[in-house]
Amino acid sequence: MNYQIVNARIVNEGRIFKGSVLIDNGIISRIIEEEFCQNESFPEYQLIDAGGNFLVPGLIDDQVHFRDPGLTHKGDIYHESKAAVAGGVTSYMEMPNTVPNTLTQELLEQKYEHASKNSLANFSFYMGASNNNLEEILKTKPQNVCGIKVFMGASTGNMLVDNLSSLENIFKHSKLLVAVHCEDDQIIKENAAKFKAQYGEAIPLKFHPLIRSTEACYKSSAYAVELAKKYNTRLHVLHLSTEKEMQLFENNVPLEKKRITAEVCTHHLFFNEGDYEKLGTLIKWNPAIKSKKDQQALFKALLDNRIDVVATDHAPHTLEEKDNTYFKAPSGGPLVQHSLNMMLEFVHDKKISLERVVEKMCHAPAICFQIERRGFIREGYFADLAIINMNDSWKVQKSNLHYKCQWSPLEGKTFRSKISHTFVNGQLVYEQGNFNEKVKGKRLTFNR
Image (cartoon, rainbow, N blue to C red; front, side, top):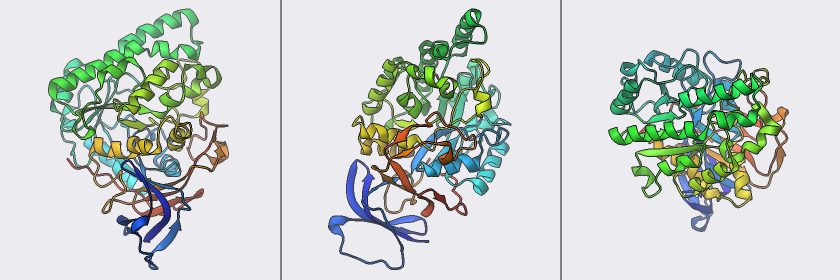
């Protein structure tokens, strides 16, 4: 099906302008600005009237955990990609701490094959790193895989890379972007022991940011940056959570030329430690949600370009798993359906412009990862698009969740904006709550 999207306010590359977009065989074939429109008629196209609403590139989420394979009681490729497209996310990059861990080329390709049959959105999968799989890492083809994921701090799964020689070799030899989870495991263990001695298993959640502390985050992030500078590694630091870490990153280099880039996740911008009392383990993430001062510093760094990308770290667990004591409740939560809505709340509050949201959630991931022909509204690019009504309020309820785990820390929240349409590779996959599940996403490729 070919489409003509008319009556749109197109948000792209720092501009908002009225116009229409033609989609031919999945590709944006023409962008017609209103002032240049000659009242041309295209009867061979199916007409989509945007109704004066905003047309944006499809979001690219560079950090999700869709739990497939091996942990599919929490989430899976089908349900989480469905939630993604309902939230305007048309491409995602999924993490390797599944069961089994994605530590070989064979297991990596099995995930791609599974996604090709089940994912409603476009996809890429990180190759996982361990203390002893450097040979497998070096087989990874830069054009076909988003990057290498290194856990420099223990998190969900058992993929901690704590052998210093192994870390050095990964940073020295990797031909791909190296994405890192940075928390110092020894500091965390020492902090946890102190609180456990005082509280036993019943540690109040408000102490989570003191256990997964600023010091733990900074020591690990600083070491990653040090290694990257030593070996000129293309480094991407995931889910930053502290003010102190912001001093590690630069904003005086164009994004295309940065060798070290930074990401913040929506929950670290949206919540702070004052929310633990109400939400408890529902907002237990690693790294931890920290102070209001940290939250404000992250937002400032996002605006001044020390932070380059906004993502989610979408990581579902069941409510039964979450409803537990501090040590037994797993970290992570579902967010990919609501990340754009969360950022649009900041637009309503005039804390950030819509153009900057598009830059950080669409353009920047495409640039950072060198994704081929996605992340922008440009002629010749894949037609990954979303239409946003900025004045259509709705409340998050179980009945409108698409996550397999069927809960959200945002339940009861009223958002002031709604994603009405999502196109993936030029196909209308989501429209006003309805899905075209016959359409499947494509494997992302990279200009490397």
